[in-house]
Image (cartoon, rainbow, N blue to C red):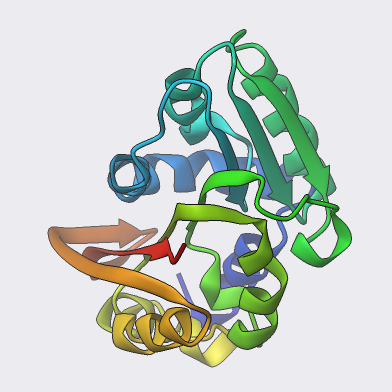
Length: 219
């Protein structure tokens, strides 16, 4: 796989669309099983809670999250890709438990009541956020006191091995993310890192890892 092919893949990761986007989303699900499971575990969703997920993609990896909040729970997915949002809504409504809504757009185009959510999760999303301060300004009021915020990212060495840093991805250290969370009155910040060995994309091998950043909204 050459750089132009990687450029096309990176564009689809940012905004999956059409048949290529659907195919890449399916392949990324295989790659992202572990990081998503780690993020859900860190979020610790409970029966009856209200949760938000930024960038659920086609929703396939979010089924366990929806199951965990049960019949009295509420799940809101915020997905910028219309194609992925439609797939996510179908997939997650078929789980048949929580109330599920999927908004097409970003977090700045959706109405969420202040102090209404118990947790928020975003896996492999922060690379596409130009301004973390703007993101936190938008989402911080949504949290109930002691609500949980979980971000899942890949380490710098992974993203650089795939040249994604050359295609506009924002590579931030977990410490940088933690500093922004503190600025917006999150506390009890925990950073957990996992080594997943070697991964592959086409004929490219890369060091694979998971970083989970968890924080608690101060009361």
